[in-house]
Image 1 (cartoon, rainbow, N blue to C red):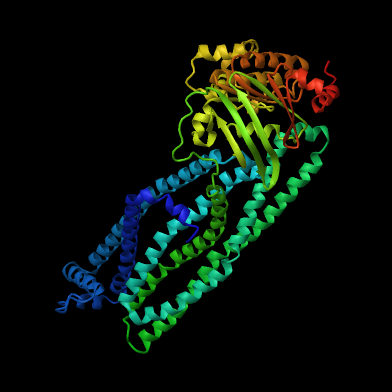
Image 2: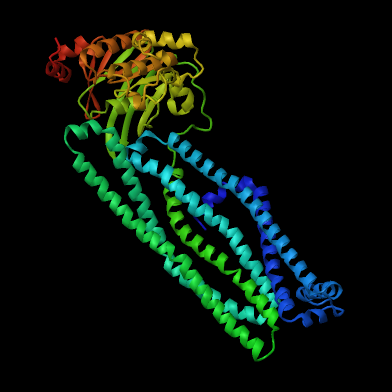
Length: 605
């Protein structure tokens, strides 16, 4: 039940529905048992009419049992109207009770469906919220396909396995309990014999289902690998075709798919064993009860035949709930593995959060300062002793070889990562003392790979300012040199750009991301190699847009093509996570150091 705590958490605000669900199930079971209880008098009326007539005799002073009371009332009806009339009354009672049983069963299902959907809606929402809150570093170690699998396949497994089990944990035990109480009432001795047999059946079922959880966990992991291969295939289809790697990728997919199929077959074989195994055990138990009870009827006269038949009929009503309970138990073993995988996301600590006393960064006023900043990830030092001040309105460029720490340094400013040592301050205040929302609200970021969404051009531009009017959107597009190509589209600003902006060229995508940054109108701009993947013409258009946007703004530019940063107020040369050189373009050229070597390698004149 430990794993069920996650599901039960989402039922805390459903107490009223749970109460009525329990009540409707209780009434459904009661009417079901009473219906079976009517079979005894029905059989006695058919095969021993005289016994029913004698039942009309006055009851003892104590009133007798419920069965005796029912027989007495039927005896009075038969004595007054005849056996055929009594038979009709019994049939009508059975029909009414069956109708009531099914009405209450339907009502219980009407109550259950919203609760099931409530749990899954909140569970998926919490997982998505958690994914939005987790730091960027978390996703560098996770496969995107595996995360998608946890949100989809594992969630479905939880819905149909675990929540289905929770249904059964109310209805089926309730049915079994009421039936057992009825059986104890009819014959305590025979029921005691029955209760000795039931734990043996439960032990056998538990032994068979023990390995299902481990198998299910392996299956869900394989599904995650399968989704990752699919995601990589869709994202790298051009490369796969260009390198004729279709056979290689197909081999990976088919191998994982076959492995998943084998695991699921083994799981299903074991799960499907639940129903026939529980039925066989139920029949064996029934035969034992028939043998023991039959001896009580024949040898000792300790049980009346009609009472024994009623006992058997009521007992048979326990077999289906027992089968369902054993199947639910098997499914629970599968579902708990899915819950565990989802909990790994839900319970991952969110390390970058607001402090309780965090304040709003209303307006960026003076400077951004790195004071003895170091940063490590998984015990690997990426930045070491960085001291850097970016004054308001100035442009600072970061250059250096790949892996020198340029992007990591830029990621520290919006707190995508937190510094490992030292301080990062804005306007003299540690950025951890600001709320994340207000801190990032002062910034606009344009990355090397344009991040766009399957939406209209307008929808992508207004991402950071959803309440922007049409005029503002158009002005942002003009500043970003995007207005002309947008208006040339058939749908204009309402053109859908496809998945990841696939309907646009590289330069068009990048100019849209610049327009998005312009519309937000941030005080601080971060450009992470925004032109490195573009052709010459697109680079010129994008660079013109960047130059236009950077006017009167504080800018941090990460540059691969050094020709784009020669006019920066200060150029920082990073090497192995440390500042190796700093100065203006001309000053660094005179030093004849790393920067000059990089310039010569790019043949910039």
